[in-house]
Amino acid sequence: MAKTLTAKEKESTIETNLYPIVKTLKKYSFLLMLLPAVIIYGVFILYPFLSSIYVSLFDWSGIGPMTHFVGLNNYIKWLTEDPYSTMFYRALGHNIFILLINIIVSVFFGMFIAFLLSQKIKGSGIYKIIFFMPHTFSLAVVAFLWGLLLNPQWGVVNNFLKTIGLGHYALPWLGSEHTALSIIAVIGLWHSMGFPILVFLAAIMTIPKSLIEAAIIDGAGIPTIFSKIVIPLLIPPIITISVLTFIGSFGTFELMFLLEGAQAGPYYSTDVLGTLFYRTAFGGMGAEASGMGLGASLAIITLIIIIPISILSIWFQRKRNIEF
Amino acid sequence: MTQLRKFKIKWILIHLLLFIYALTIIYPTLIVIFNSFKSNQEIFSKPYGLPSSFSFQHYIQAWQEANFSVYFKNSILITFISVILVLVLSSMAAYILARFKFRGNFIIFFTFLLGLMLPLRLAIVPLYLLLRDLNLLDTYTGIILVYTASGLSFSIFILYTFFKNIPNELIEAARMEGASVFQIYYKIMLPLVRPALSTVAIFNFMSIWNDFFFPYIFLSSEDKYTIPVGIASFFGEYTTDWSLLFAGLTISIVPVIVLFLIMSKQFIDGLTAGAIK
Image (tube, rainbow over all chains, first blue to last red; front, side):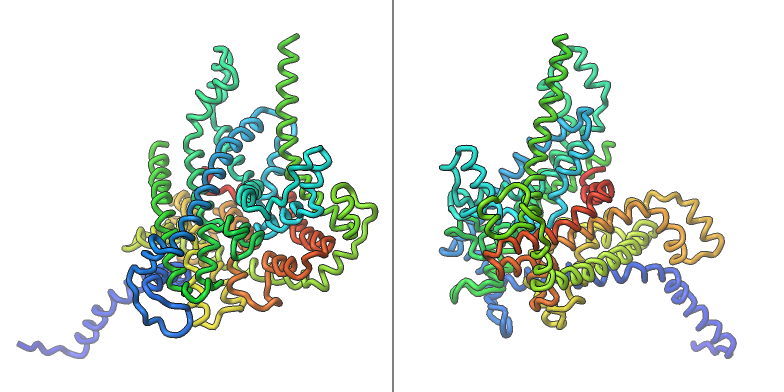
């Protein structure tokens, strides 16, 4: 049964039909302020990561159409097929080596220096600034700075060793496959140490003084105070630093690349996942290793290593937030 | 008496340890600066210690011949535009996400947070192809967009908490007076989160200014190089001209050191934000 409407009635229906839409649009117009960030983030962050997964399933040099679908073959190559697996596990081992040195030194040395700084000493503010300063340098600058100072011919470090009578330790530090990776780890720590020191210092400062004073009255020495009071209260920053060090150690690239080249010499002794990834995707590794697909799969493998640790840390932080 | 001596020994020991560690940072930095004034011969014979005379010749050479003036200009241009874009986009987004309820709010916020644990360099292959297809390789626009995108996660994460903590009454009062969403953001919210904005600005400034990876991949013509990439090409070109290399290094670290010394508190706060609460 058709209902006939007068013109006026029609108009009002249209109005009442349209009104909610206009109202909704107006109500949600604030989303326009969110939009630019979402678009930029979507295009330049989310899309590349999702696309990485897709590209990693192809055997593709980066030129021409991407047609040769190989499934998980690139992953299998890295994990099981020589020479890829040799390169992969060697690089992974080097990353783990860097990680261990970094975590041990960042946590223990960082806590130690922070503890010294927390004692009311004159000039602690100046020390803080000095310790943090290298953190503000570009890694490229740090690499070349130490590259010059470690120059085997006239480098300041070897010259110094000769002066103090340790001439036989004057080695081509960065040119020897036995020392290069360790030296690079130390250079990396020289650059980054200020960060854990300040994080630990901030945590130590929150420890109630009365607690330590009570311990001193009870006759506890510095070692006891350190192990019984300070360290337990420092568990949260220890985890924060460990997680950040973990992510940093698996992302390490610049120092190896700039000091030892894309081939991460000598004899691949400083090759890490970052340099291997760069070589695969951009450097070219000869005809057999074809670029972009293989590189993307290595990137995804690295992500699979990093992400669980990050998730754990976020979970931990949330838990901590609830506790406080 | 013995207690006083023990006390003194403790302070001396602490200072000694801190001083030695400080020396491992100060001394290499000073050597670089000192050697930039020396001739190659003097560097070879007396690599540490003060130079016998101060000549600025290597600086002039590095600045003009080795294009450091160009690298500086590019670094300033790219860093400043990117930081401003990050500040504008992230503060608007964080404001909306923190203060408005709508469907998808949490998912969007969570997706932004996800970026905190995804190192963007691992997606460099598709990112490179994307910029290539958009004709943005070797352009300022391309690298600025990438930096803007990569700064969003951290910045939104920091600003979100600040916007959340602003009392509701302020906004209600402004709304009663007929202020629009944007006016509330611009006139009321932004001034209130200024400390967080400076944290975010410094954090992004340092990570963009010092970044080597993205300009190395994306910028191919030397007249677009930033300082970190410029110094790499400079070291490749003048491999054995040590005094020039030291001058180049000095040119690239001294501005950062000066800026850091002037604003050390803001720098330390900005760069350790997120880890310290």
